[in-house]
Structure formats: C-alpha cells, structure tokens
Length: 381
Image (spheres, rainbow, N blue to C red):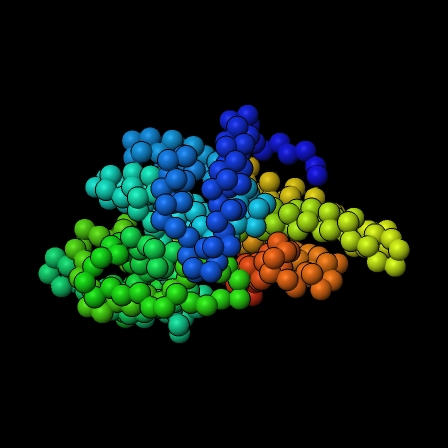
C-alpha cells in the first residue's frame, strides 16, 4: 500500500498498542459475542483502561485531549481485524463530541470521565420507525412540564441500545415547529418509563447490540437539555460530517483488509492444477481492487487531514461516506466471488465482512441521501 503521511510518531505508537489490544482482547472473543448478540461490559472497561476511548476528550474531563487521528487509528485497527462488535467509534467519535461541543460544564464533568473510562456506555437515538433519515419529521416528543421534560416516543436501529447507560435523544420540544422544534436531551438508562425492546436480529454486525428504545412518560430534568432548545437539528447536522468521516475511515480500511484476505486465499487455493491467483481473471480483479484501495485511501486520508484542521465540509464528508461504502460493497462482492463457496462460510472473515458492511451504505445517511446532499450543493445558485 501507499505510504501514508497524515500520522505522526505518537499516532503510530498508539496504533501499536491498539492493534495489540484488538488482537488480544477482542478477536479471541468475537465469535462468542456474535452468539450472545452483544459484547461484554468488561471489554469496554478494558478499552477505557487502555486509553482507547474518547481520545479527543480534554484532560480536564478525564481524556488525553488528542486529535481526531487517535480515534481514526483505533477505528482502522478494529476494521482491519473485522471486529464489528464493540461500537467504540459511536461512543467516542460520535456521541462524545455532542457533550464536548454542546454540554454544560456540569454535564461534561458528570458524563465525560465515565465515558473515557468505559464505566458509562453511550448511544445516540435519532432514527424512528416512520422517519428513517428524515430527522425533521421525528415524532418523539419532550414536552416541558414544570422543571422537567416528559418524553414519549420510539426509536429504532439504535447501536449500543441494550448496553447504553446514557442516550443522546433527538426529540421534538415543539412538535409544531418542524426542524426548528428538534432538541437533544440526555436520557439516563435507568429512568422510569424508558425501556429497551428486543435486541434486533441483523444480517451482519451480529455482536453489536442494536435495539428499539421506548419512552413512555419518561421524566428528565430540564438540565438534561443538551445545548439550546430548538437547535437540535442544527447540532445534529454539525456533527454528522465527523460521523460520515468515521464510516469512510472504517470502509477504506475494510477495503484493504478484504484485499489482503483475498490475496492470501487465492495464493493458497488450488484449482485445475494451479493456484487461483495464477489465473489472469483473478490477477486482473485483484489489480482493480488494489487501484480502488489506493485511490480511496488517498482521498480519505486527505479528508482526515482537512478535518483535523477544521476544514472538512459537509459535502466532502458526504462524498467520502458515499464513495467509500459503495466501493467497499463492490470490493466485498468481488472478493467473496474469488473465495468461491468458502466465501459464503461464516468462519471466513470475508463472509463476515460482506454481511457486516452492507449496512454501511445505509447507516449515517443512505447513499441516496448523500446524493441529495451532493446534488443540492452542485446545483445551488
């Protein structure tokens, strides 16, 4: 692969530790977690003890105050090993920034240190059964009642849903105001009236707890409001660029991993008296994938560099998310084909990656939503 220039020595030292942690504390237990439908709480605490969670949290709140690249490194190492169970990236790179950017001092001091240590597992609840990616039309409400909000509604496809101790909830504090009525509210996992539905059965990501969440007259104090009332939609939009970049980071590394697994397999597997890799069709397919991997890596690394400087715009993030996930899906399909029947066997990492990563074209905004974002910018006056 091409030489990378975005990481410094401290990031590569962190990578060595992260890779060791993934190999020793995640990979050996991943099959067990897939059967259980969720990872253990212990691995969250171990990740916290190792300094792998919420690396961008400032020191005054228990973090190390690192830049986005530390989280990107950990995301890459998980993707490289096909470790899709622990949703550390959601907790660290998606939920924590909401608290960092919009939380009160009290909220930051209460929650961020526990998120850094892995004592508290966090989730963000946006998607609803009837709304999907249309966040302006969510129906979950948080209606003011004295010093409290009373929350009613339902969320679906919520990662970390079974384990979450803290949920950043997108809801309507003014149901008549459309997108201007959306607010973000913190909901603790033990609030009366807050219940979790079944752990959803998925085609992939089997070790990741993904759930329905139900809110029936859940009372939370108004001090649980995250940011400014009615600004929730804008807050979500401001943070979605990083979420989509995280998906692109994971996808670019998954492309490289799929290529590595397939090169190794085709070299070893024999057919008609020669290795699969000796056939011209195989060599040409691998060359095509290598070219896509290098091009994707160059673009995603540029996006990471721009993001660290605060220069990554929403449209470029949408392009990175769309193209990385679409190319990943093409690559995985080709790699499964080159594995033959074994590519459809769960014991092979290419099969699990194929099943897991179909979701990437949907999560964080579907490919079609990304096209809408890109085209609107392209055609604006």
